[in-house]
Length: 94
Image (cartoon, rainbow, N blue to C red; front, side, top):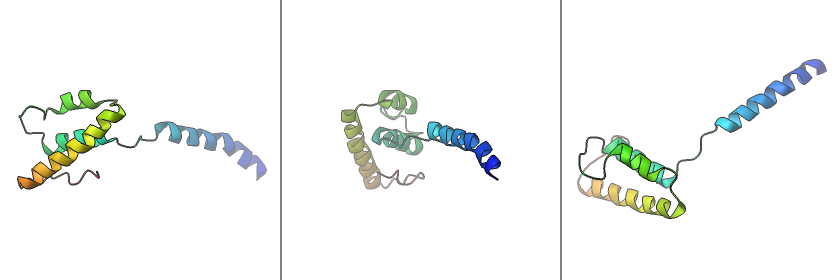
């Protein structure tokens, strides 16, 4: 029995290491904002709603920009609610 446990130990530690390395990072406020715009306004041709441009703009955003994303998402969701627009993606969690 001990022999099997010792044989499995390296395998289990490898699985734990791989799980740690592939774990998803938590979404940032800018990720949430971009996801909301891309999910809810993908057909919107107005300036500021281009999904790819937003992804590049907010990729690796610093803390100050992350704070701005919180405000931008809140404002967008408020505007959408006032306009009677309901996003099929639902609430993004922020």
